Amino acid sequence: MTKYTQKFKLDLIQEYLDTGCSQRCLENKYSLPKDTLKKWWTVYNLKGPEGLKLRHFKRKFTVDFKLRVINYYLNNDVSMSKVAASHNLLCSQISIWLKLFMEGGSEALKPKKKGKPSKMSKMTKKDARKILKKESDEIAALKSELRQVKMERDILKKSLTLFGPSKPRRKQ
Image (tube, rainbow, N blue to C red; front, side):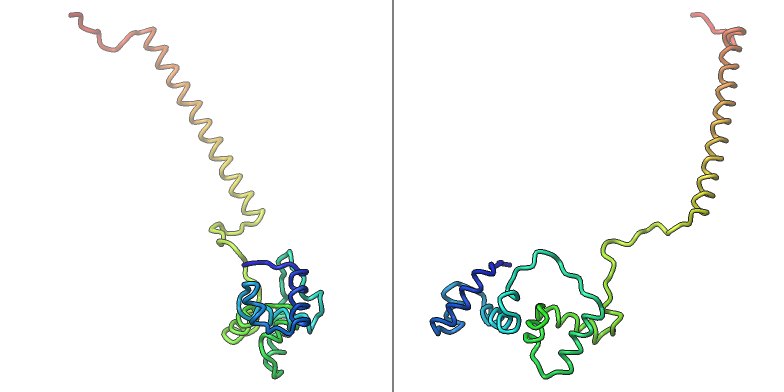
């Protein structure tokens, strides 16, 4: 999406006011998408030059704000573009909120957690301690068994060196 500076928008609106040229004519002259100047003009009339500033951050809207915007649109005989301009939103955002509200009520307007849900269940500290103790007991048992097996191996090695192999080897 092309971003236009506040100065460019204000210059275009000033040219619209000074020349008397139509909005469509100016959009063609500057290769702007259809109805762009119309949206800027509506925002300019409602909020003044401050309404045309670029936003450099992602805004988060509360459920209460979304409900107020939807309520305003439904109860007043105003177009969605005018509601969007007066609240400094996009028309598409309002229509998305309206669709969600119609399908699922105010619950659907609540923000959703992003990302893939965790496969691991949440465990308490008590559960974690139990698992840790169980694993440390298992490790201690394995270490003692390893010590025992090493001692048996060493005894077998020594007996082999002292007594030799159990069967004499044949010489060829």
